[in-house]
Image (cartoon, rainbow, N blue to C red; front, side, top):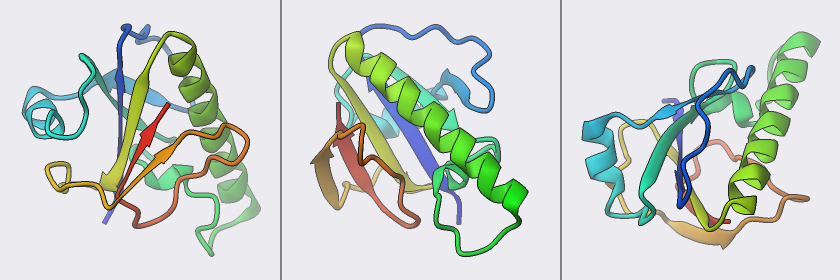
Length: 128
């Protein structure tokens, strides 16, 4: 199953070309499920170069050098997006298995830009 990544912010973020990231407003039905965990008004779906959150996971245990390079680029772009979001005010990030957005996160942690990473199979709420 794929990972899904959602960002909630106090201030709206510009939805512009952020390649290798995809940043788009969360679908209305998904936003309704996210409201149980994410309290901030602006909700976004964030995807890696793969079109889901799996491309943010650095230690896939498989892949070519090119795959590793693309994952590294996506992970760095996500970190930069989170730093940008945090500079605009409080923000929250939910990382979960796709389709499990309504389930309560198993872990809540603070955002550490230096040590941040997305882990395969995690269901975490990260406060920025």
